[in-house]
Length: 250
Ligand code: SAM
Image (cartoon, rainbow, N blue to C red):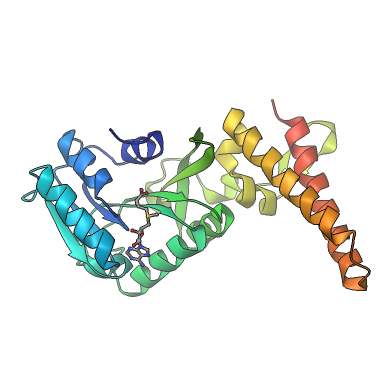
């Protein structure tokens, strides 16, 4: 059975697509996508030999060798231009996912791709910024807690296909109650859709971030260095920014 995290990624794949899952490891996602009839065929990409073998085994054991091609290679290099219309990348850092997309774009491997379903473990802001800067529009964001970890899933389509949603609207400064402003920077960090419908996992994530920052403040307070004072100021300001916004949310 798929984890809830991968189940939500799966649900972002449009019915009937041809999907590529990059960094597929055991190929759980493509196996479930084809097995459930959601997609006709899939490609599982893996750069590391161990996970590549695991993906091959996973596909063979599911008896889906005809529908799922398992390919060995770095990022989107495993794809021919125009071959798939949806790409999923899950379980890596946001910076790594953004660099995979960036290289893929430069190699023409995003040609024909209509939907991206991405699950960064950290660095969500880096990924949102990459999407924003490259003409992709977020159509959905999900956040959930599973086994004590919090995961975000970002779904994006091309600007031209975003049916009335524009990046300009999504990242427009949000004026919250009592004059609190959520600026573009904070929208990139916290997520424009998540901020509109925050759930328990969202509040837990940001309380966790505040706790981390408080921890850094405590360790910095032991330092006599002048630069420590400056850092403390920045961290305090960041805590204030996040807290103010959280307090204004429903
Ligand atoms: N996608 C699965 C999931 O979410 O459960 C597996 C996540 S696993 C933590 C990350 C996988 O990405 C590893 O198997 C790793 O080998 C693979 N990976 C990392 N960098 C990659 C790249 N540049 N191209 C393809 N696969 C990559």
